[in-house]
Image 1 (cartoon, rainbow, N blue to C red):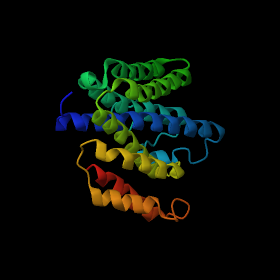
Image 2: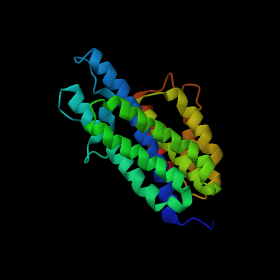
Image 3: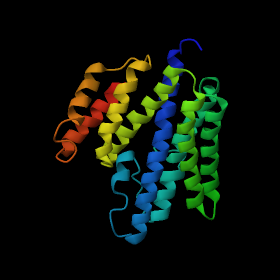
Image 4: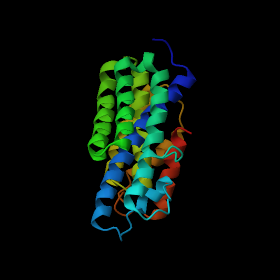
Length: 228
């Protein structure tokens, strides 16, 4: 396979980002929904508002239904998986029909969950299909640059969401290490200064236990700049 075009490198990056956004957001929603069932009086919307879910609805299921299935909120799982499907179909010859099929099956399972009497089971199938897609990348994406671009997209999105949600911050270092080992194998242009500053902040002895809210905002800014 020849050199990847700029359009394809961007689609590969965003395929990885949208797939990770779908699965991390979905897992976070399920955990938060479970907590809401225990205490509907608590701040069960909480961190999800950081993703743009500012629905005023005080019914937990209706709120989380919007987070999962909204066609208009860009951060909803539906919108993320729909965007991933669009990229996967265009990239089928690069990522392989098998990997593209897992993306489509994840989206199909999400649509089934929307009308299901037992949506939690179908949502678990969504997670399973996304994880299968991630595993399939090593088997079916034969172009080394393309494979690493998808994985860089996964890592940068995971870092962004963990920082945005103040969630699993201990894992941000590991994702930074993964990104560092792959980024120069992609052929992508990136902001080297921003990435260096990101590494310095993440590997500071103060991270993550002593990081302040303002510093977390700075971290988000650096993550956004890497591939801007």
